[in-house]
Amino acid sequence: MPAFGMLNAAPGPSEIVPTVTPPIAETTCLRREILVVDDHPMTRFGIKQILQAQPDLHVLAEANSAAAALEIVVRNEVDLIIADISLPGRNGLELVKDALALRPALKILVCSMHDELLYGDRAIRAGARGFIMKDEGGQALVNAVREVLDGKIFVSSRLSERRGSASGPGAGALRNMSDRELEIFTLIGSGHRTSEIAEMLHISKKTVDTHRSNMREKLALANGNALTYYATHWVAGKL
Image: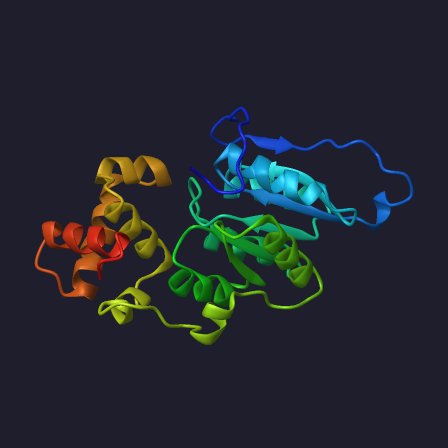
């Protein structure tokens, strides 16, 4: 189950979810406007509840895809995006690059369950100002948001010490994968078939097969079964 979560109704596949909050006397203009991007309604709701309790933070809107998020960025003054990596269509790392192309001064915090030693460094290199794991507590999220809004880079002490590295015998090869390849590799290791991955990422099965072939070459694996075995054991933490 997604972290930071509470039950909420799910929107349509590419729906923008506006957030309306009661006006707060005198302090409203001092609040920083935040966009929450995650395809899990419970996670969005949980993050919103945490941030709305802070007098200086306001969740302006929610979105469940990169496309919906970019529409909000174009139409609104957003101070900060909090984005997951796994999103339908273009992933969170691609969203970081696209959003910064539209608004270079925009601050972005990536919030994900993915391995921070692999994805954290990628997020920062893409232009995000911070990376936080979803299993952190609510106060940690608030601290990360405030540091990023203050113009600082927020990463965990573990990631700070090992920026650009990852554990395991295949770490070097994994770092050589593209962002999309690493995303598909993780989905393979989580038990998803090619057709399921294509549907989840809104790409063709042929494109998934091309990425699989590229990953086999980079990992020096003989066939698709070897790739699945490797990915499954990596996701399980056995590599």
